[in-house]
Image (cartoon, rainbow, N blue to C red; front, side, top):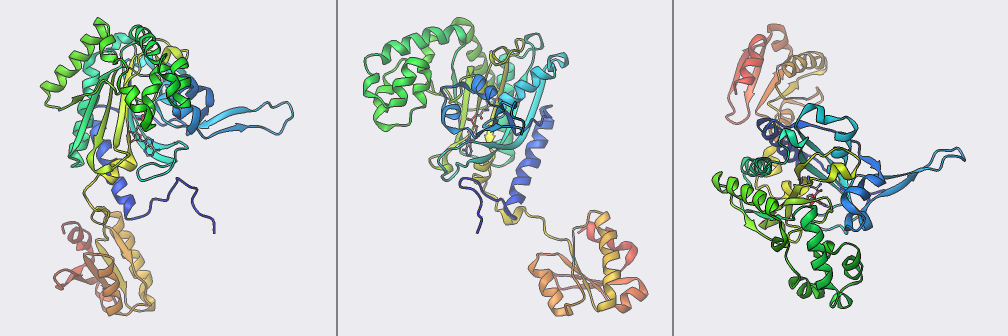
Length: 425
Ligand code: HAM
């Protein structure tokens, strides 16, 4: 038997009803915050991720699904392609490719699959879904303003509230800008020099190539050493400190609670200044429901003009896991089950079904092989509110018996009134 690939999974009804509920809600919230949808390709040139997410990150060094795309011709050297492990790089590539700066500030959102070859476990998949958003634009359009950071964080609080997700914690940090990073990296290198030999192989390498990435280490024995390393908060320059204070002031004024965590550096290289994660208690080990931050130099490093930006991505799989609502209750049940009584009634039933569906009534259509009792049982099992009986007398009079399956009451309804009767239930 051929099964779904390890780390991937099928989403089936009724679970998909919850996913749709989440997506409908987030689309409403994005509309309220004036974000518009962008859809970028699922695969990109490998170089895009190496240059944005960073060579030394776990994502690029270990987790990407990369393949050589070769044509048939001998001369075709092939091109290295990668299934996107995240969507910020693709959005910034599209921003540059389509010269979106002409439009001022771009406020974009996306919903779609991402791919990382991680060890599968609860809340961690190799194909997972992200709901993300980015605000990006020329500095003249206000893209650098702390008001944008606060807008993103407020949007997230609104979203989680709308989905009735409580118990979340917003962890906030500033990882500084290019200037701070140079001095901070130097300090980290110095601090790591005498201790790196006692750390894991990855950390020994990171200590030299990209010391910030030491903070991504999950090896328990390395944690006491990492605990002693200098904190980025001590290395922020004046503009970065001011920016961070301004973000916090807006959050406090808008009533959004946060916890400062100066060890939060995020596992991607492009971050500058504000970085954040929302965690949720009920999720267990994989408790980061979403993460994000600023990436003020990313456009330039991909060959574009200055285009400061900030964004986030929610792990939709984890978001759905943290909902309290049941999938069963999110699934729309048929409003009516149409029961044709007899072989020549199928045609009439099909006509009625079509008419009602055009009025947005959810219809399940039975067929004549069922007797009345069996039809009513099937209708109840499906959770239909009504059964509509289509027999010879009904067709002749154009008045149909509508049975309320909750109360058991049955009423004759003229054809012309059926749709309104069912809509007003
Ligand atoms: P990230 O922290 O790598 O950030 O991923 C964001 C979220 O995606 C995580 O918090 C988690 O909920 C979910 N996620 C990541 N990996 C998996 C997985 N293997 N299985 C299930 N869920 C997963 C980014 O991707 C950045 N692009 C976010 C961003 C946008 N920063 C600025 N703009």
